[in-house]
Image (tube, rainbow, N blue to C red):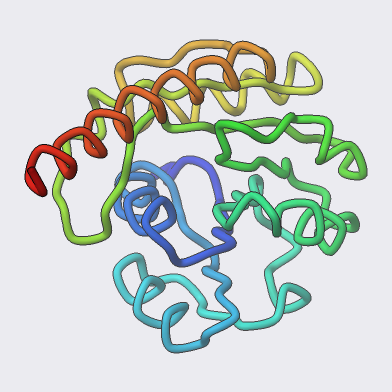
Length: 184
C-alpha cells in the first residue's frame, strides 16, 4: 500500500505538532528533528518516526523536508539541508521563498492558521498557501497539502506576506482591544 510522501519534520512547536498528526494519516513521517531530543521523541512517538537532535541525522531519502521553526532560524536550517535531494519547504507566512534558494528544489507550505499545541482544530478546513521554485515541486506540494486540507491555494511570497500581515493585525489587534477592555 502506498503511504504517500516520505516527510522529515524540522521543529517540534505548534505548527510541527499539528502537521505531524495530519500528515501522518496519508504520508510517512520519516523523522522529526528538534534541538531538544525529548521534544523530538515526543512528536516522533505520535507518528512512529525517528527522533533526532542533529540535522545531519535526518534521512537522505525523505521526499520533503518541512522547516517548521522560528522565522529567524529558517535560513540556517535551510543551509544545513543544502545537500538533501528532497524538496525543502518552510511554513512561514512572512518569509520569502527565496531564503531557500540554496536548495535545488524548494517551496513554501504555509498553513494560514494560528496554532496551539493543545487546541484541536479541523485541519481539513485550514487554507494552505503553497509556492514552489518549479512546476514539479508545485505538484508535490499540492499533493501534500491536499492530503490534509480541502483548501489549497497558490500564493506568491508577496501575496502570502500581505495575507499574513492582515491576519496578524486582525487577530492580535482584536485581542489587544479585549485586553484593554478588560483592564478598563
